[in-house]
Amino acid sequence: MNPRPEPATVPAASRAATLLQDADFHDAWRISSARTERSALAHFIAAMRTTPPWV
Image (tube, rainbow, N blue to C red; front, side):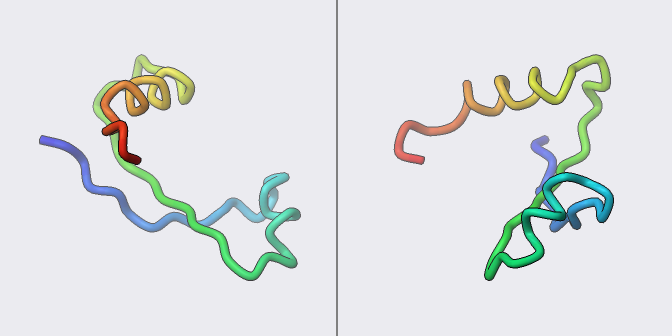
């Protein structure tokens, strides 16, 4: 079963939040994972391996 993405908020104290202050639009999503041994980078790489070429 693939986890479903959920809307996420950008942490107020993050560097990204300061860049978004004047933005007209931003998009942030999150998923839960049982693979807690993976780093954020490892999750990203795994997702890119399964992303269809047309994306």
